[in-house]
Amino acid sequence: MKQILKGNEAAAVAAKLAKPDVVAAYPITPSTDFPEKMSEYVANGELPYTQFLPVESEHSAMSACVGAAAVGARVCTATSSQGLELMHEILFIASGMRLPIVLYNANRALSAPINIWCDQQDSISARDTGWIQFYGENNQEGFDLMLISFKVAEDPRVLLPAMTCLDAFVCTHTFEPVDVPSQEEIDAFLPAYKPGHVKLDPEDPWTLGPFGVPEYYQEIRYTQHLAMKNAEKVIDEVFKDFEKRFGRKYQKVNPYKVEDADIIFITIGSASGTTKEFVDKARKEGKKVGAIKLTVLRPFPFKEILPLIKNAKTVAILERNISMGYGGAVYADLAGAIINEKDRPLLLDFILGLGGRDITFKDLEEILSVCEDVIKGKKVERPVWIGVNKELIP
Image 1 (tube, one colour):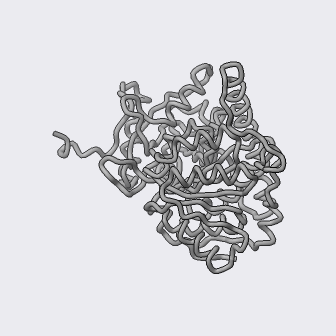
Image 2 (cartoon, one colour):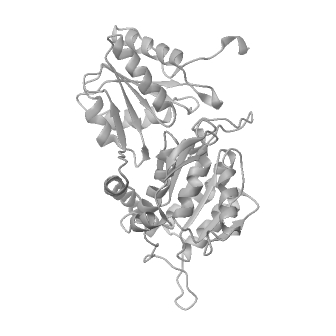
Image 3 (tube, rainbow, N blue to C red):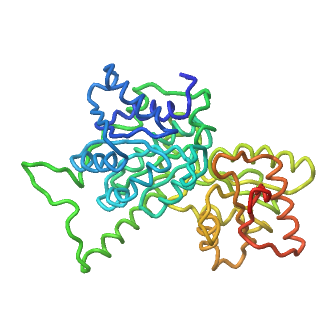
């Protein structure tokens, strides 16, 4: 059934259909609708078996999620920006203890200065915490990827936490039609969680999260890495199952008109739609341009990306993040992945759209122009900043 939902509401409806045992959350703009809706569902009896924990901070929210998941509960939460940073310490604990918690993150810029609008610095900063990361382009994808997150995270071959990310305001506060399957259909896709690896029980006491001495610590990290590698296959399987049941196709990497492209744009999130429209415009002008949207950032899908870009001349990575003194995070991942490949294009990272600044056709025209100059032999210092107002810089 179609419903008109904001992105936050779409994520909350998906979480409701997943029937979580525990939701622990602390409100923060722009994800506040999520805990509001979840508390409403619990209060009005729509989630009679769910416990909602209104905690005092995001650090407490993730800590409560860890405790609940350790007793075998299906658990979810939501946050954004500084809230995700406050959770950061516990993100590693959730992953290290192999707890399949699901987190909805509304991508928002980090302070200072304080900014409530969209960029992806918050979740990008968490990419090395051992969490699976999905990024939605629109509200339908936000809804679907929340459900997919539960199924992937809880798979016995994975057992890692997962986050679904959706761009602040552009998606979170924009109303769009979202196809919402019935509870029965969701139950068939996502049965009740049955933990086998961990379950705190006073009748059968275990020690969880013990002291990790040097003789064991590295092996624990190795098993986490293997689990993340296992997630590559599991994600593909879940995507296929989801398509079979609901008719919507997902891929870790989504190519658009890249077959003969000399220049390929790589995007994450809501800017992907604008970029595809721009590719159509450039194609009408006779320019061989394509685009790739990343739905999954962790595990990093380099095996899927490489065949798509190997014949391109230049790959432009649109980064709504910045690693100060270096450049874009996705550039770093992809550059490391292709460094030993014989056939590889030139990579460029373009920093733009920070703090909620729109990514427009004008920006994409500038990026295309830079790429064309590079193909002609011009040297460009990376990262390339797009749309910077030099008059504001002392």
